[in-house]
Length: 139
Image 1 (cartoon, one colour):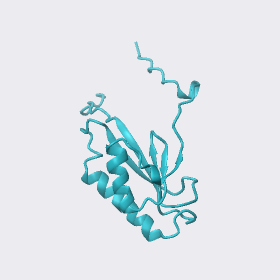
Image 2 (cartoon, helix red, strand yellow):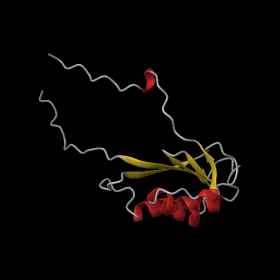
Image 3 (cartoon, helix red, strand yellow):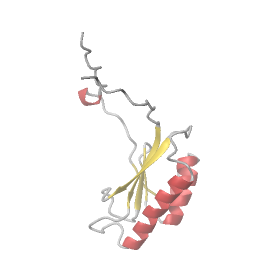
Image 4 (cartoon, rainbow, N blue to C red):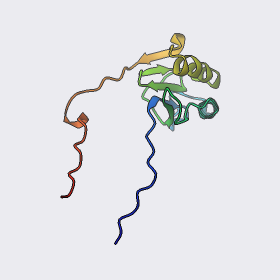
């Protein structure tokens, strides 16, 4: 049997930011108006796409976006969490999302008045976070 021919190799793009939006939670504690949450999610998807933030060729790296059911901040929703900074914004309406993307994600300056919480990402040390060893090759 002939081994499969490897396909084209593509480099994995660097991730600049990961945006998590709690906009349509099942329990509605943080975002009592589902219409606002849904509109915020649609705006986030549209702007990330239109502004080319998910383009693998973007020199700064791509921007990922995820709709989360709960970010455990049950106030002032929709709630937008931006990694790697760990900045959480409240009241993330479509209008606010546009400004947050423009000033924080693209410009690098957080929009201070809307920040609910800062949860900076710090890597812990330990065996779970060590790089995986290269697989052994057959002789």
